[in-house]
Length: 142
Image (cartoon, rainbow, N blue to C red):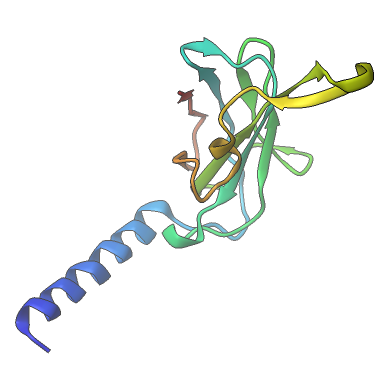
């Protein structure tokens, strides 16, 4: 193995270690309050659901945290019945649908935002929830 390969491998391991340490994976404990706003193309998203999924790649584990998006674009996360999310790093997804008139007058759901925001692997949305304080995390979707 060349010196260049060893250096590249060492840098990769160091970077992954720092990411994991910086995000402090959680396995329970106190939840931190998380609120924020979701905007789409510069305007508040008026409905939908936002989901925070623990990012295992960055050292986080635990349960999902979910919130309904309010008409002013705001949300307040809950983990089960408890308000807040465990400290750690998360991948974030957003889903928002509206009913439109379909064939024979049936309501047909239509996504109000690009489908990529519904998949944590490609949404491009991520964040860190910090323990011991209120977290305000806003998202601006395009």
